[in-house]
Amino acid sequence: MPFHLYVLRRVLLTIPLVIGMTLLAFIISHFVPSDPVAANLSQRSMSDPTIVAAFKAEWGLDQPLPVQYLTYLKNVLSGNLGKSIRNRRPVIEDLRAFLPATLELATFATVIGTTAGLALGVAAAVRRNRPIDYAARFISLIGISTPIFWMALLSLLIFYNALRIVPGLGRLDTGIPIPPTVTGLYTIDSALAGQWDVFRNAFGHLILPGLVLSTYSLGLITRITRAAMLEALQEDYVRTARSKGLRTRMINYRHAFRNALIPVLTVIGLSYGTLLSGAVLTERIFAWPGIGFYAYRAATSLDFPAIMGVAMLIAIIFGIVNLITDVLYYLVDPRIRAQ
Image 1 (cartoon, rainbow, N blue to C red):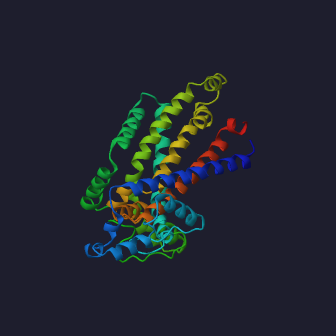
Image 2 (image 1 turned 90 degrees about the vertical axis):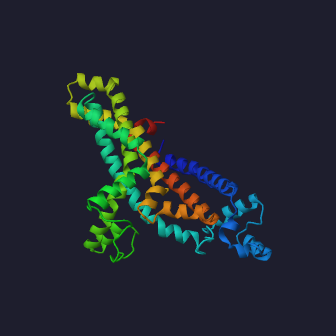
Image 3 (image 1 turned 60 degrees about the horizontal axis):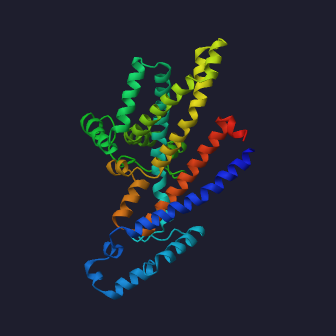
């Protein structure tokens, strides 16, 4: 299949995914046993029917649910995600302000988890039942089974409170100026501006939450890579390569690893999409002003426009990540190109 047709087909399949996720988020957010009017109006205002009616009319809460959803989709297609009930700002501006922090943290965590997970998984497979294999399996078990919030609190207690080897909460120390905004990622913006003191401070704040956030993906990627490599090393083409006298390193990394990479790409894509959609607990514990922090605040105040805006952003993120993963499939697996 030609590359452009493959990409077009995947893009068309992404559209119903995005619409379905927004519909699911709309249904869930409107059927929780809570009242957005009571959550956003004072007790005195709640006793005035005129104020309550005006609030419902302003935010469309007096319309039937199907009408509310269709109105929302119409506004989304025009680039309007509505205004936040909580702060009266356009939701799309809030998302633009909070997304770069999550993008920076999620990318850093994914790079760490992917690099370490691939290295451990391959090493464990090619040295099966040796000390490196046992160590990789132990690390994988710890990463998968340890709750992120517990890991975050423990790491703060040890590395920040006791040892003082990492900075505190947030993205920058108090008094450190925010670099000129280009991408919204403090490390990149400070490097572009040549503010290396700001870069070191921003990178220092990124290390601990990034390491904590990478533990689950590291453990999962290690486990999947090891299993996929073990399966690939048992295939006939590997035995044929060995019988031809090819070097072990070439067999392991050029032949077996390339085929083992296909299921691993799926795990990496899903992990990155999940982190980009907002690591709520990690961002709350480290006071990281990202999408997870924003989603938590919107959910606790029943800010429906903000909740739906986050849902739309998550749907788009997963759609893009899945599209990129499918493109990588096309580049890695020649069987797809032959279809």
